[in-house]
Length: 399
Ligand code: CUA
Image (cartoon, protein in one colour):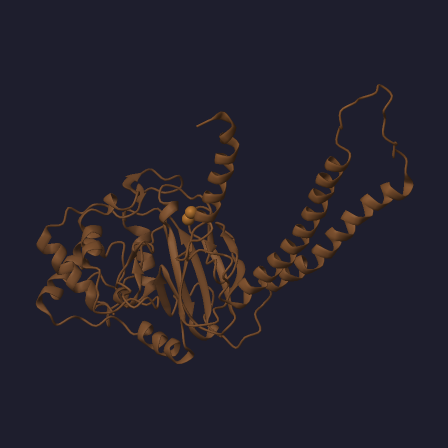
């Protein structure tokens, strides 16, 4: 290629890269396709500021190009050829000070209004309270149904990875962390909110339509920050009410033999960290969250914050493994997995060797302020293949 072609090739390459990267048609974390009240507010503000920026850009760049062209050096050059000096021109100097200030003031008003809207108490009728907990490396959601719970009460519903809300309702959230700083972000529904230890902050969410809305932790929080995902499942009002009733019920004891064997394994191997609430609290599966909390405080569980996902209704969720894997494959593309398309391979692999899928630090280490060494994340329990099969059968019954 001749040397003179290089600039053209570079321009062509830049155009191709721009076009290729600007056309993702399956981009669930796209902030430019809002699907709820709050994200539409953000998008509206973005569009308005973007238009102002484009006008400024075109005027400034156009002016530069125009002047550079019009007054470009045209050959002969004389020593005393000097353009007219504008230094001290009162009108010009006041003008280019005031104009940007006016533009910024115009942009400030809707920006501040939007910021307040995003954090205001929502005006909807939704009257369940949801607290969002970030921890290394998954998200938990505690529901106080009817918002009647006293401080510190066990929640009515506790889910992991999946937050379920009714579509069309503005929903206030409390965002908290159990260890380091995380950041809660469902781009299609709202901006991000940091989850800060020892602090509870308000945030809102809203989905126009039923569907699944994906999110990702956006504050670097250690080994598996990059796969600390979450999703919101928005349901119709009736489906949401039905979901609440299901979730508040304890898990049924399975009748199938393999599942029963799996339940025994669960109670022996998994229940020191995970909870499955059963009627009456048999074995290690406890009847109440308060009992679980006490047991965790005093037992050498391999977790720093003493929490692992509650699995009481594990099989009712769309995704698992902190949102990394679908629990049921979504064949028809409506966002919801088909219940007969169970992702057995991923669940088995997770039980076989969790560390092969997700970076964690399950080996106990000394923790300042605690007598019991703890790690974080799921250890490899070296389960046999038949044990894994039994556990999978059991977990599938937890709908
Ligand atoms: Cu949690 Cu990054």
